[in-house]
Image 1 (cartoon, rainbow, N blue to C red):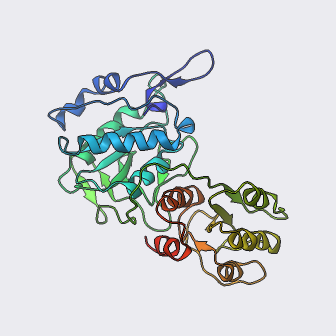
Image 2: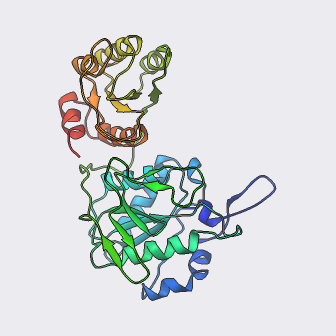
Image 3: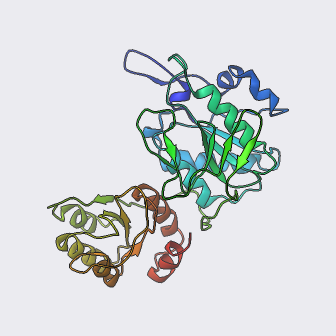
Length: 314
């Protein structure tokens, strides 16, 4: 898919330029884990430029090789890797694993991590314990797509699964230590493609409601409100949430904290108020993943009770 792992410097800044074939040829150790490696160049972009259609194209390419491959490794930029991985985790139910990986350092930089991450991804995709599901393999760890997030802008050990979840497995020099059961636990949604519009609205001290009012005015299909703490926001924003829901726009509440789930405790714009207005709980999902879930869910239904069931499922 592109990303730092395939990037080289240029006059206008670094950009993905290395082909998938070149990446594979640069790491001959991959042949220790796969008898045959089939390369499909789906796109060649920094992940900050990827669109939902690019991810859908990736999902369709994965479906096409399900019957001939034992596993799929996706090279991808780290900025939105977790969103693409979660998108496929929701929309695909393949009988083979999909393992995303990439790099924090380009191939031309000192101690590039791309080759080691590729080896980890291939080890995971071909391991007898990893039979299905979508993952991110990075820094000799394997994380579930639903749980993982990029936690640091530049460190090699950027990917973490917060909230006490931790990695699925850790790779040693000779083996893999499995910490919890692999496989997808996400609710199954039936579509890869979406043309819905769902903005993320941030909460901040003293913020006005213009973002939510604009979403109502423009007829957006849904809203994700990234709230405080347990899922609280100001009275000003909560009234705008009420009006959005009254106009038929579902609103999903998430927390801007990095770990933990929501709880409807406080009134006066807090979680209890928002729940009373009919807002949906994003549980422990970060806002950007709750948005992916809402986009795909809205392709299946706009019924609020059915959306509540989807968001009440893992």
